Length: 277
Length: 274
Image (tube, rainbow over all chains, first blue to last red):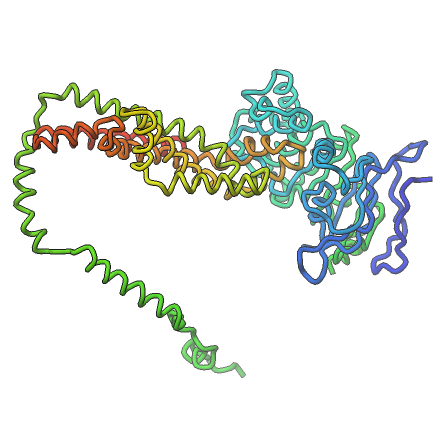
C-alpha cells in the first residue's frame, strides 16, 4: 500500500479518475513521502485566503507540476513549504521534518537540503556565474570562504564548475550574471541549486520569464537533471504542455484549494484548462 | 446606415469632468504656507541684510584681492607639506570611517539587523555622529588627544561614520529582495546573505557615498585646521591674521587645486567602477 492517501475528489468540479500518484516504476516497496502538506492556510490580509486548506503529498523521486491561474496560490504554497512565507494554519512535513515547528537553525539545515529555483532566477547580478554557483555551497558550509569563488576552496570551485558543466555553461564561469541571457541565468540558478546537493527541488515557474525556445530548452534540461540525479521535483507552471511532458503528476490549484490531482499522462489539455476557468 | 462622425470636442462635451490642474489646498495647508513665507521674511529682517554695507564693502574686497596677486610662493614647500598633511588626514579619517560605518550600517538596516534594539541604538548613534558638526568633533578631539592632525582625522572619521552609516543603511534597505530570498532559501546564514546578496547589490551606492565622503572630508579638513586639528587651515588662519594676503592667495589656490584633483579623481573612479 502506498504511504500516500489520495484526496477524495467526489465533490470536485474537475474530476480525474486516475488521481492516485504514480508510484516509481518497478518499485517493490512503498515510496517514502518527501512532502506532506495538510490543511495549509495562508492569507495576506484579504477576506479570501490565498491558500484555503491545501492537502498535498509528494512521493520521493516524483515530479509534480502545480498549475493554476494567477493568484491561485502556487508561489505561496511553494514558499510556505520552506517558510519563506509563514503559513497560518495546517502542517508541512518535508523530508521527514515538521517544517512549522523547526527552530531557526534546524530550518536552515532543512532549507539546505531543498533546492529552490525562482521565476526570475534571483542571482546576484554583480557577481560572476561561478560565484553565484559557489553560493550553493553555503547550504553545507558557513564562512566567508563560500561567499565568492575567489575565496572558495579548490574542491568547492571544482564542484561549482562541474555544476555549471551539467547545465552546459562552463565557458561563462567568470562572466557577470547581469551580462547573461535569461535562459543562461536560469541555468546558472539551476546549477546553484545542484551545488546544494539537494534531495528535493522546488521551482516556481522556472521558465515563465523566458521565450518559448529558451523555456523549452531550460525545462528539458531541468527535468533531465532531476531524473538523472533521482531528485523529487515540485514545480509550478503556466505552460500546460510542460506540465504534461515533464511531470509524473499534475496538481491543479483553484482559489487556494487543490481542485485537480492526477497522473500527467492521463490529462488532456481541455480538461486542464478548466482549472483556469 | 453609418452613424454620423462624433468629433473629439463632442466627446469632451458629454465626457466626465476634467479635474483641475492643481488641488486647492485645505485651510490648514494654506495657513502652513503662509506661516512659512512669514518666517522667511522675518528671517531676512533678523539677519540684518544691508545692501548699503555690501556696496560699501566692495572696494575693501577689491583691495584685498589686489594685494593677493601675485601670490607669494616663498613658502611653497611648507604649504605643500601642510597640504599633504591635510589630504592624509582626510584620507585616513575617511577610510577608517567607511570601514567602521559598514557594521554599524548593517545593524541600522531594518531588514538585516539581528535585533530591533540594536537597530534603534545604531540608528541613534549614526544620527548623533551626523548631526553634530565636524568642527565640534574636532574641538572635542583636540581636547582629548591634543593639537594636530590626529584630532582632525578622528573628527573626520566620526563625521564619515555618520554620513556613510546612513547612506549605506539606506542602500542596503533598497537592495533587491530576490537574491536575498534565494540565499535564505538555500539555508545561508544571516551574514552570508548580507555579504553575498545585500552588499554586492548596494556596492555602487557604497562606492558613490564613499568617494563623496572623501571629497567632503578634503574640504572639511581645511576648516578643521582653524581649531588646531592639523592641516593647512592653521596656515591660512595665520596668513590672514598677519594680513599676508599674497601668501593666503597661495594657500587658497593650493586648497582649490587639491579639492579639484580629489573631485576629478573621484568622478573618474565613480564612472569606472559604477
